[in-house]
Amino acid sequence: MTNTAAGRLYVVATPIGNLGDMSARARTTLETCALIAAEDTRHTGTLLKAFGVRTPMVSLHDHNEEQRAPELVARMQGGASIALVSDAGTPAISDPGFALVRAAAAAGVEVVAVPGPCAMAAALSIAAQPTDRFCFEGFLPARGSARRERLLALAGESRTLVFYESPHRVVEALQDCAAAFGADRPATVAREITKLHETTYRGSLAELAVRAQGDADFSRGEIVLVVSGAPAKESGGGDDGHGGELDRVLGALLGELPLKQAAGLAAKLVADVRDNEAYKRALRLKGAQPQPGMDKL
Ligand code: SAM
Image 1: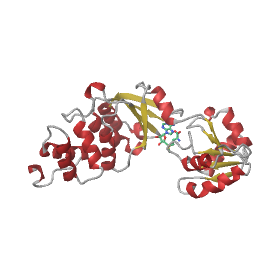
Image 2: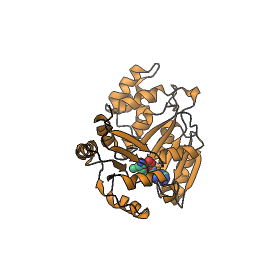
Image 3: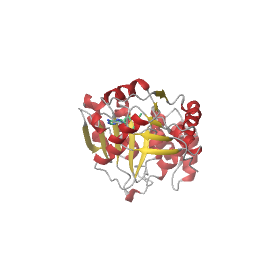
Image 4: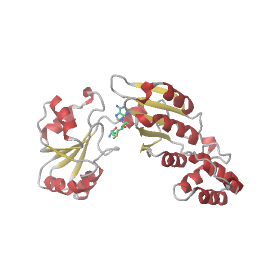
């Protein structure tokens, strides 16, 4: 039950690159709260200065939010309202905030959204990919093998996929997406949304991967990658010759088992697949080379 005598936790979205996107309500909330819990107080300090807001701040980031949440919840239970902000966009969306929101809700403190910019929603809204059903996958793993495994597990996903990606990894991410989902799958890269150099690139995954390699601007600034879902007729996506089922099974197993074991098990689980075929497919999915003797499985 909500404690009405307590202060509230306001989860406040801030601009992702254009100060004009700061809402009047976000500004008033930051002005009138007792305290602002900010991912980076120096970064938010610049924003507050731009709007003449003098509310005190406390830092709340990935490394301290579990420890700090109880003390902030106690302050709210004592009557103080707190605004939660991250460096840009909506807190708790691939940003700190979840632990505090959960702790506040569990303690009966009212949690109030002050919605606004979010790179994921902004990119999806301009992607020209289906928006009726989508799934937000946040950041892909930085390590190549882990990234490929994650993508394989998503090969059969029919909803539009939305990823955050570092500009330094966008070429590899597009190449891995093309390998896992098929080179022709339509996709959109939304770069520097709301900023001076905002650019939207649309094309097949293969086209975008080539473009990203040849165009230095592509790898500068912030990026959201939106990939169309697997076509219904494939009922699984991928080009594994088994309607994507082999890729799906391998995708799950490769995350848990050594390659040879995963391939052997996949061959047992998927109809009409021989050990050798599963092994070769697993190698391709992992981007690995065959080891001597292994192709004789
Ligand atoms: N909480 C934020 C939100 O609501 O969008 C996201 C924070 S996450 C740490 C940062 C990632 O969001 C970036 O690496 C990029 O993928 C995406 N992003 C943030 N701002 C962006 C922008 N202006 N244009 C494109 N992508 C952006």
